[in-house]
Length: 153
Image (cartoon, rainbow, N blue to C red):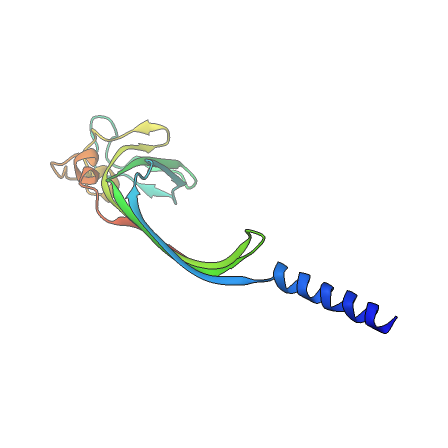
């Protein structure tokens, strides 16, 4: 009887050890990031416009909570990741992955204030200046600056 119990226990331990056999692995990837355009929106605090004539007269009051928005287009970027962990006999695995992606801003366009596109309006409309600046809102924001970067674990 004791031999039978020992044989059953040894078999059970061997099966458990096989089920949990593990192997370390390391992996990585490098790729191209094709970031979708983003639509950005929010709402303003109260302010008084500058000279955006004729579309927006100087001194126009804009109420707090007026919606604004614009579209941002991104250039092609890059993505990379590194992963390490344990692979089990049951084809399951556990591990940690560090991932990074980055894409530059190409341009901004379609600036809207209160539902009206103001790309063609003089940029003074947003600065409060009573004197026209000689550049449109669209021209000022078209030269996209910055990037979008994401790092995750």
